[in-house]
Amino acid sequence: MVAPLRGSLSTTTRTAPRRLRWLVLAVVAMLGLAAFALLSAAGLRAGWSFVGGLALVAASFEFGAFNIRLVGRHIPSLALPVALLSYLTTVVVLALVLVASSPAVVDGLAVGVGLFTGLAIWLGGELLASWVVQEHP
Figure 1 (tube, rainbow, N blue to C red):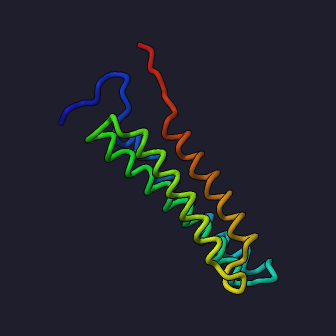
Figure 2 (cartoon, rainbow, N blue to C red; figure 1 turned 45 degrees about the horizontal axis):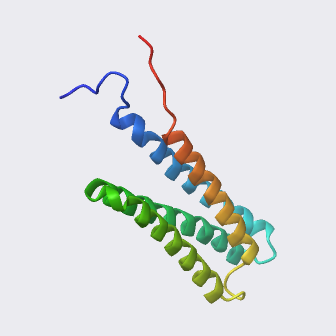
């Protein structure tokens, strides 16, 4: 086994924020589902709408991150155009989902809260993953 270079982050250190982010998303999804189902006039429909908003954020960011990592590994000069196309794809898919969803099926307020909650969790996880700790000898 090769020891990591001095001052570099180990694999465990880099993957821990990603695992934490997924754990936080799962816990918030369960709590949000219960809270919206109990407290909203829309009932369980609002709870599932909240979970759908979280899932939209998680899927779109994971899709974009995968594409950018893949292209950055094999064709680094195309990383920026792929990132921009990934963001454009996310916006188009989100707009299509929101336009195509029926108000009788989806609670708009719960989806919006789910989207913003998922965004905050995802960005917090990204910031935590990019936290650089420098060790001084």
